[in-house]
Image 1 (cartoon, helix red, strand yellow):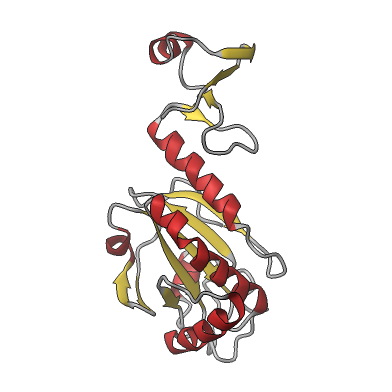
Image 2 (cartoon, rainbow, N blue to C red):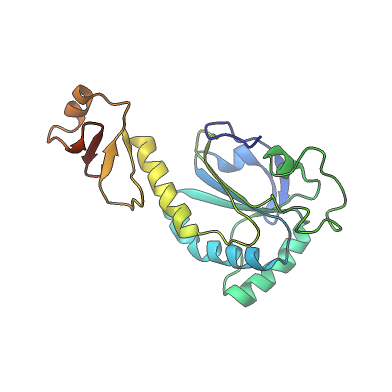
Amino acid sequence: MALPIGAVAPDFEAQTTEGKIKFHDWISDSWALLFSHPKDFTPVCTTELGAVAKLKPEFDKRGVKLIGLSVDPVDRHSKWAEDIRETQGTAPNFPMIGDTDLHVSKLYDMLPASASGDVATRTAADNQTVRNVFVIGPDKKIKLVLVYPMSTGRNFQEILRAIDSLQLTAKHSVSTPADWKQGEDVIISGSVSDDQAKAKWPAGWKSPKPYIRIVPAPK
């Protein structure tokens, strides 16, 4: 069963391209994005790692730490980084976990507990379920999970958009509508009564239906 939203993200120790980490300590009081890859030197993941590297300033602005994972050793990650720089224009500028014992992949329910074998002989198809995105809050709880097939590259602009929503709604009693972007109107959360809403939004709200209460995005 996949890890549910709201669950504490499993802690672990692992070797990365930037040294050994203890995951919760590494997150500290930041947000974190953990995204995984079934194998080094795979085409779609090569484009993804380059895309995230280019977007790192946007994640930094939001206080989000980036960390990748691949079921291959760290020395292969370093060699892969050279290909990523050559083909995508930017090499990974964040740590990449070497999950050679499949421990993290199993811990995050991306591979079954029974999975085994030398990672050197495991193919991308063997690890195809290791294609997830986890957004984790400063409280170490999972806020969002996305699962992709190997053939579909991830849309990291959408992930940034979702993080904007997660961070806004974590601070304020609002929700964001479909296709919402930062700065657009939001919806007063259903858990807020009209009396409570009047105290928070004395100017009132637009209400096309009693259960839809639209207000400007909080600053």
